[in-house]
Image (tube, rainbow, N blue to C red; front, top):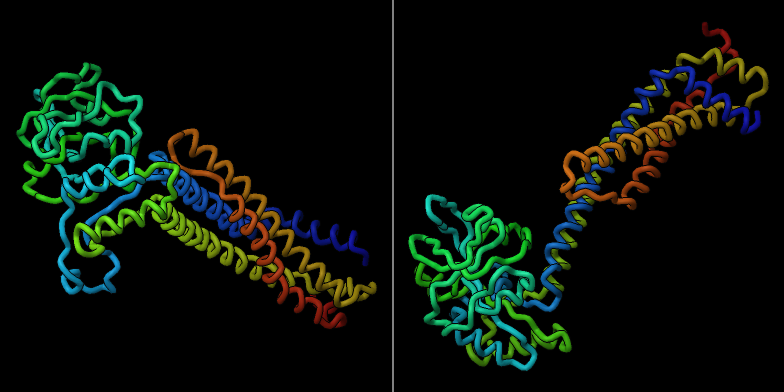
Length: 399
């Protein structure tokens, strides 16, 4: 029996049992669909988060009080942690490697204009925070360079905050209340979206000293600095550490660069994609069990057919190959069906939800197709071997 004969014989067996073949392949198809859609969501989410993260540039460094690496023990064991102050920010900005240094803190507050009120994020910042968020196309202006400890009561709105409070009206020059304190609006930031779960567009930005008085705090949550691009990030971090040690007596801060935060994010998203792909892999295994079951049934049903083939000279190897090829056909059918449904599902999802963060993860799709073929081969091996070992005389006696 030539390979062409094997191919025709095996494919005819699959085609002649259309419904059985379809239902058997459906398990593999569902697994492939899961891999396409779930890894697509993971890939899209990774791309979206990284794009949101990198829109502010790669030369931003965040400095927050306290060390995060203390072997799980309280910070007090290792010494007193000093709060970050306006003087620290001014000293950082005087470093030759640093362009701007801006204190940043955030809290929830009630923002009111006339009869409209919403609870959202209140951000205390300095005058150069527009450099951090790259607010070149903003409406109006950002907070001025007042005395940082006694600034005027001025505010800048995020675009969503502006829409909620003012609609289409011009907010510049208007008075709003933040936790019952009055601020005059002097600017509106351009849209920036979400950043690490914080909606930067639905916020109001006020001077840091006003924030500290409003929330009764005397420290900053962090100081964000932008280093000049002509200096390497490592050089900027080394300068910051030396300054903090000189001012605080120890390196009692945690320093995060865009590079290491981005690396951490990418590692998390890779594991997320792998995890969701594993769920699709479980579906593929279930599909393999279906192929094994159907092929075992097929061997029992076609015992007399196997006897005829053996009687006309087909070797045990050829009999085994017939059933192996049939199980591979079922796996291929499932993979093709899954690819068609999966790509269609992504296309339809993007039509109805165009902002959905989804993208095709081609590497995982290729893996899924090859795993499908391997599962078909493995699932069909035992039934194929059982068919090859049938005694031809006994097989011919079977009705």
